[in-house]
Length: 83
Image (cartoon, rainbow, N blue to C red):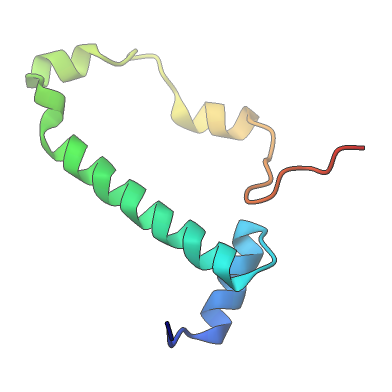
């Protein structure tokens, strides 16, 4: 199979994902694209809940921004080597 992919974009994706092969980068990108599509599909149904049920599902004191600021940075794509 032959694919014509922008080399600069692919190199950037490899760097962001922390992978060393083009195949890994493309595989990861496709998996993420499918995951996002499935998430949009699930969320578009409103999770089969009423607006009131959806409001009550979440803690009103939940502060996503504060959690993100306090979260340690993570490395994506590769597992740390043992040793």
